[in-house]
Image (cartoon, rainbow, N blue to C red; front, side):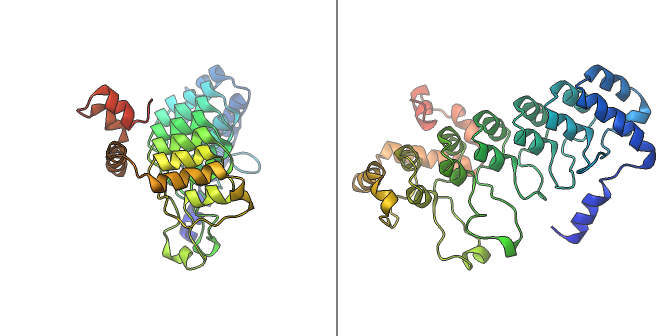
Length: 305
């Protein structure tokens, strides 16, 4: 983030003096979840001018972010109906959607996405809605974000000097390490790279080795279900296996890898992976149902058994 970007964000934070009173009344109505009062206020021009103003102690916020933080859906919908800026930023470059995801308010998340919120959050914020939902293991919220086109292989946005192997770990890594199996599978179904790892030259120059998700699952002793899913979705199983105390406790996981090496995938399985890879690259996985193939094969391509 450049100095100009930071200056721009800070210049947007404080409301004009004549807007301060209007902001306070709007925020009070939102805090009390009084959508009728809020609608009445927004019917007046002096209050409509404050709809995107930032105010409050600590981190100045827009009325929309305040509604998202409280989970007051009716107030949030009222603000959107009156033209609130759906992707407005606060001093941390967080959007109302990021706030709703962090607070686990699924209703607000859905309403913001339907109103056109960027499912990836702000380009200026280090974290993202998907990374947050993945860490928390919130399947319903993650499903909403992915449905609206959120990136599956996003990583934290940090300056080059602060980047390391840890900051390069994407949602798939996070869900595996935190033990969120359903989120892990959901990401793979929406096109997450089963061989995801760091590919940026500047960061690779700082670290000894860039590990794939499979490497990390073995290293941290993830259950065999994670290994099987990675195999099913086409992860490279021909990786060096360092046998440690944890991997010795993972006999089942190791056996899955060895079995996969000994018995390569069937032509049908390879065809499924090829179709999914092609559609995923084109961001068209939702077109599987449009393929001119029998329903049984469509379900197979979608991993529905």
